[in-house]
Structures are given as structure tokens and as C-alpha cells.
Image (cartoon, rainbow, N blue to C red; front, side, top):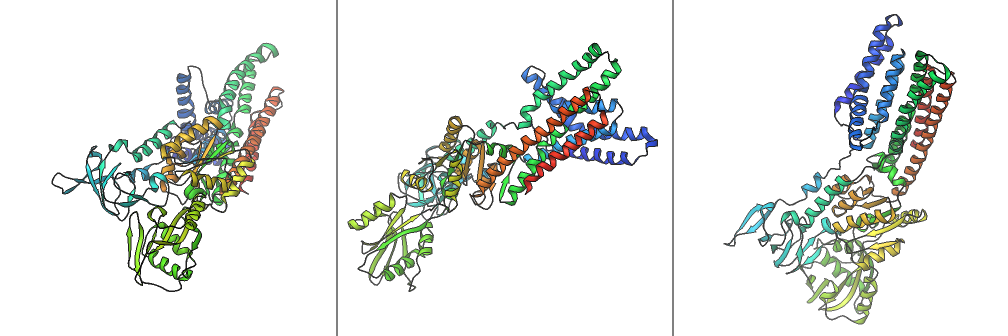
Length: 621
């Protein structure tokens, strides 16, 4: 059920709390004033939970299901009324304060029910440089663009909309779409996607899709659609609540009538015992059974670097049957590093490294950073460098031409380098050649390597029989290589954002409760669609906002702690339910045998409430 976020209910609750404290200080000689204050406190503290939610939601649910569908709020209201009728105004107020307080705390623990997509909306381009009939450019709104329009995209610009390159070459950062950190080189005829970031080149493109149909718009639509379709899983208490309330509401009138008919009770005495029974069966401890547990679990996880947006998601995490992982930035470091290198023995390796460093230090390409991290030059050379899209970095030194680029940009390659290229690339590496006067003299392999803690995390879930899946926009070779290294059950490669969401839907149908771990904008639809969406904390704001849990230190091993904690949380909740129901059973038995009264019932109730709260606090350790 949804609870209001407005301040008014909480304000009324504290007014009720203040009136209760005031009543406790009123002398017993002023019993009328004391009881009036208790009554006002009960109404104020219970107005939102009992009247608006209890009565209101009972009416709504009854109409929807076409049968009487009460909740525990109604039962608590009746218990409070019953306690007041027999003169126990303090007990009535105490019941409402505990129950309403538990509801507000549970609501607070649940966090935001609506996932924010503000940052995602901000990433959507708003303007474009439209090429006019006179060849001049004019800044226009992206929403006004039509299929067939020609646009100019300058270096560093955000690509405004989906289209195809008509002229020019460039490299584009497509991480917002594919999740990959390495920019892709683009030539005439290649597709480009809105919201991606253009590199150093300038190009002319033709619009091929309207703004509402772009790939980025589909991400937005999927996030919103999956969000609206996401059914909030009922907690254990919510599943038991309707049956329990209906049972109590039917049983007590029958017991009152039965006592008159079969045991010759007077109507007054029978009604009194019925009210005692109503108080005895009120779900006071049951209401508190989950609150302390979930708050303790949430606090525990926060101390260990895991932020949870609600106990429902922690409960779901304990029950997952499958878990899917994004690759880049989730299972891997998110940036490439040099894994292998080989240089010709006809030239000193130190000399080749000096040349490589001199060329790469002029580049802002992610591969350049990885190469500079790997190699330390003996001599600092000053080489004027040019970056040719499609050919790579090029510069002249000591009357010779040197070039670093992808293997397909070279013609003079010996079998030795070709074999190394094949060997390393089939293991998921990105390979570049180094040439001197167009003769290849070196080869370097780079790869976005798996996180150290990733393998242990995968192994943990597999030991529990939970199916693991790698979902990536990477090539099959790269994806399968990472999956093989980490021992993942299944690798699904070459996927787009909407594919990820569909894959999660398929896994939910095939395995049951499914979690998704990701860090990028492209993961957002899948994170929302999953039963439990888990974001890497150093990922995009969008991924963190739409997720249910966030690993704030980007340590995927914390996911193991989160799963263990959620499992313990669920176990303790069941313990609390058994304790609460055991006390109810005892009080019901005592009521039937005339061994208890309203005061005794309240004392036992509050005692059991304290027990379940203390039991829940164990999770703080």
C-alpha cells in the first residue's frame, strides 16, 4: 500500500505524542481531563493510519476486489475503540502510538517508491546545428528536427539525434548507449546515436529518426514503462495480514455470541471478554516485527558501503534465483590496461618505448592513458603527433615515420605479429600495432580487466545455485572471454539497452526473482525491470537513481555481504512473526480461561513488542 509523503500525518502523530505525555502528567483526580487528552491523542496519532488508510483503503480494496478486504489498520482501530469503551484510554493510546509509529518508520525505511529519472532527462540533447538551404547553420530545437534534415556536429558536441554520417570522420564516445568506455571510430555511412559525445572530428549527418524514436528516447521510455509496471513485492507481513484480520473480525463476534449461548455469559460480560480478546489479538508486536529488523539491516549495510532504498528490495535480494551483470565498470575496472606487449628484436625495446610514449602523450584516447600507465620512457622525445581517424597516431622522428593504430590499418605485417594479434584478440584484448616506415615492429594488447573481487562474488552466488549471466554490448569474443575467466554460467553479447531489459524479462520468466547489477545509462532499463536493481556507486547518477541498492564504494564483493544480510533479515523477521503470534496465541488462551484482563494483555503485547525490536537490533552487529 502507498503511504503519503506529506508532513501533515507526521505532524499529527507528534501532536498525539505530545498530548499523551501531557495526559500522563495529569493527576488521577482529573480523570475526565486525562481521558479526554488520551482520546485526542489517539485520534491525532491514528488519524492518518487508522482513518485515512485503514478505512479509506478498506473501502478502495473492497470495491476493487468486490469483497470485504480489511487490513490490520482497521483491526488496530477497533482494538483502540474497544480499549476505550472498557475505560482503558491509556492502553488505547499506547496501541495507536506504537502502531502508527511503526507504520511511519516502515515507510521511512522503504525510501522513495518512485525512481527519479531527472538526470537521465538532462542527458537528452535539446539543440542541434541544422544546415540551411544556403549552407549556413542555425541552432534549432531537437524536437523540431525531421527525418532527412542535415546537421553539422562539431568536435566535442553531443550528437543531437540518431542519424547517418554523410561526410567527415571522427571518434564518438558511445558509453551512454553501449556502456563501453573506448570511443568508436566513425566514417561516412556509419550510424550515430543521439546523446553520444563526438570526439575530435567534425562531420555532417542526416537525421534518420524522429526524436521520439531515437535509441536514447527508447531508454527513457523503457525506464518509465518498467517503472510503472514494477509490482512492489508484498512483504511477509502484508501476505499474512488480510487473512489474519478477516479471521479475527469473524471470530470475535462468533465467540461473543457463542459465549452467551453455550456458556450462559451475560451479554455485558461476553462483550467485555470479546473486547479483551480483540486487544489480545491486535497485531501490535506483529506491526513492529519487521521495522527494527529492516532498519537494522539497512544501517548495517550502509556501514558496509551498501545503500538500500527499501526493505522490500532486501527481502527480494534474499530470494533471487538469477543475477545478471553488466561487464564494463561492473565486473571489470571500466578502463583498459596493457595486458601483453611484444617488440621486434631488430630495434632496442627502450627506443621503441620512447617513441610510443612520445606519440601517445599527445592523445586523449583511453588507450593512450593505459599505454602511458604501462610504459616508462628512458628519454623524453618531442614528436609532433597527428591523429588520423582510421589510421591512428602518426609522427616523424629522426627522419622516420612512426604510427600506432589498429591492425586493419596496416598492410606490411609479418606472420609473427598476425599470430599474436589473433591469439590476444580471441582472448578479448584490443590489439594495436606499432610501425616504423609502415613496417610493423611492435604489438600491444589492452583489455578492460576483471575486478579482483569479481570472481569470488560470482563463485558465492554459484555455490548457492543462483544462475549468473553476463550481459554486454561487447563482441562475443570479449564477452565470452570475461565470462570464462570469472566462471559465469552464461554470456549474452552484442546487446543494446532495450535488449538488456528484454533479457531481464526473459530471465525473470525462466528462473524467477532476478537481480541486475550495472553502472551505466544503458543499464537503466534493465535495472528498473529487474526485481532488484543494483548499481555500482561510481557509475552514472542515472544508474544509481533508478536502482534499488547501490554499492557506494564500487566494491562488488559488498554484494555478497548484502545478500547474506538480507538472508539473515528474512530469517529474523520470521522469528519475530513466530514470537508475536505465539504471544497472541497465549493471550487468546488466557482470555478464554479468564486468566487475563485488558491490562495484562497490553503488558504482554508491549513486552513481546520489545522482544521483537531487540531481536531485530541484532542485525546491527
